[in-house]
Image (tube, rainbow, N blue to C red):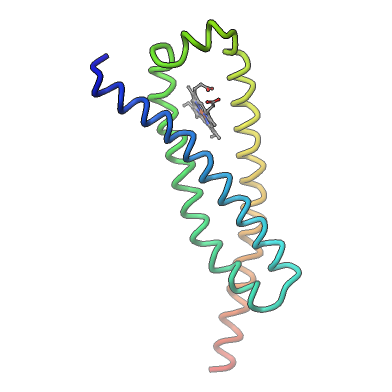
Length: 134
Ligand code: HEM
């Protein structure tokens, strides 16, 4: 493969990992803010409801990036990663790792949907309170 294309594939593969880190960190931040909103006061609830929207955008972008970037990574896997993976005998491990990663993403998705309901509840309560106060 032309070396200009190689750079793009290597960059794409790296960004697949970076997007995974973005997805994981937004889930951790959401979970921490969600916990604080449950036990905290009005300020925490409002901060959580506002952060929910931004974090959801980040996470959705990261997930789309992971899946789309995973396609060229898979196509060029035999040229860039398969030979070392094959010689190291870790192809099955890589598959198992992806089963775990995808399960973690599904579990994170369930948490996300639950916290989304909570965030929308807080946002609605905040709106009502503001309209009562005028
Ligand atoms: C949706 C959840 C996914 C997550 C969190 C994820 C995460 C990762 C991570 C962290 C690596 C680096 C592993 C390492 O270097 O040791 C990786 C590698 C890779 N990913 Fe994904 N990935 C996901 C989905 C996909 C999808 C949908 C595809 C294919 C369309 C894909 C194709 C690949 C390939 C070919 C590799 C290189 C081989 C390997 O290390 O397993 N991934 N992925």
